[in-house]
Image 1: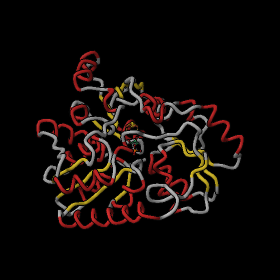
Image 2 (image 1 turned 135 degrees about the vertical axis):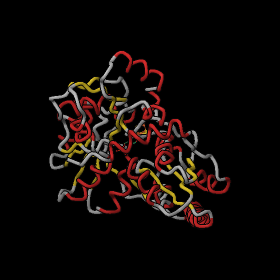
Image 3 (image 1 turned 90 degrees about the vertical axis):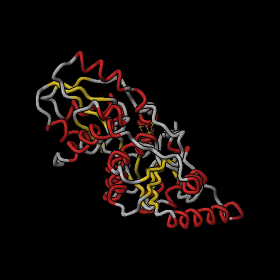
Length: 323
Ligand code: 13P
Ligand code: SF4
């Protein structure tokens, strides 16, 4: 599928709807200033939400922006665990999650209780947890990682055996890059990235032999084997912007294409026939952002008894130098 350069809500043409959207966006910006709020959006949210955000980025980058911001309120356009990470890093700020229904099925594939049980079976084995997880799971982990720093974090850990949670595909990928460790898997996955069909990818490659193929490590190993570049959301965007190629096969959530098209209007971005869409990220609308600012709800506040150990795991990750 070829992705067009549609902005706003992705519909062609102007008219009342686009005038209303522009007025709504102006109203949101004005209210954000009144509320002393910074609006941050994950790349996977809809273009309209990108348009009103002060920052658009990947999950950890956004929480760091929240921390750096001088504003006292953070409106998080993304899923629940991301707002929790902002709360872990910025306990003195009011963190609002624009749509409380936006959860992450992968983060829900591990509970703190299940992790505690598994740890009891593996005494002395460090637990490395992907930031795409709840604060309570982070609190029971030794250290966190993102898809951008996972190899450096893995190499920094003592001992040969590591339990990695919750993403099995990221763990399998890391195992190939850090073969001297024995990585024990957790059976979690991201449904959006896991379901990519290898035959659809091969068809795109046959039809576009000059295209650069970029995949997120949450995809299955058979998909990563077809890719020229494997990287985090930010890594994929950076690789496209730095490449001289004109065609790109994007194997991550389609939301990244909106900022890519703006920066590379000359390029063509191709996606598999079965769309890679995260339904939870797409739940966040402009009206949600407006309502969050009007009502100053829903607040995400991680309790101190969870925040302190979760912060320890996040800070250990941040202390690892990038490789
Ligand atoms: P990153 O934004 O950290 O690459 O994570 C991908 C993802 O699936 C976020 O939900
Ligand atoms: Fe969760 Fe995957 Fe959606 Fe990210 S893209 S929020 S990992 S389901």
